[in-house]
Length: 324
Image (tube, rainbow, N blue to C red; front, side, top):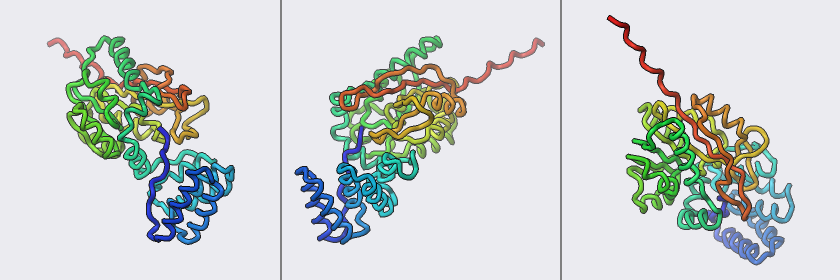
């Protein structure tokens, strides 16, 4: 999923707000030069108007004015400490500043709250999304190879969204827990009646809390979630702490042929395969399977992705008692 654009946040100045809306109307008609001029006047009138600065950056970018776009996005960032509009990501896309900035909670929450009502339709009908079915197939294959029964007492769905992954694997779990940062997505998942427990929270914060209880889950899923994470290491380490011995961490990612982590033009993160392997190993997780797959499409073109299943270390067998 790509950003659907900034939501309007008032400047507190009625005249500036009206000019902003006029500029957006001009952009909607295709007159981007006029829109940029009006927005430049708007931010002169209201210099702290982050929404207008962001819109000005986007329009200048569309007009091919890279330097002007960077200047406007920088102003949006400076006047929006929570990065509600994602100006840091736009600056990174334009090769200015941090190349792989973390996505702020405010930005991700806003993005998915906007998208929740049409999320299922968009992913399955327009983006050919098949992450949940691929994850189920991968989990089944790993369990079959290990000769283990295909049943999980406790399954955790990270970034559960509307419940697409939960629906695909619900039949394998005795108890299904979902966590997501977006209240609107959680509401959609709740309406499906799939989950035994749903929590609105940042997944890192949730995992940190669960880790205090030790190994709790037999299977942790992350379907199309890590594309919004700029650093896999903290998540992998936290998952390692909440998995029971022998538990599985199954996830999808987008990938690239370079090194490390890369921010794509779609404002989603892609991981190199060797980076994934190193990070999982450092977290005490053993790779059970990795398969290249197009989890989704972008503008009709399959996106390079990976379906990964990792296993938590199993405890050594108990020492046999010496003969008495």
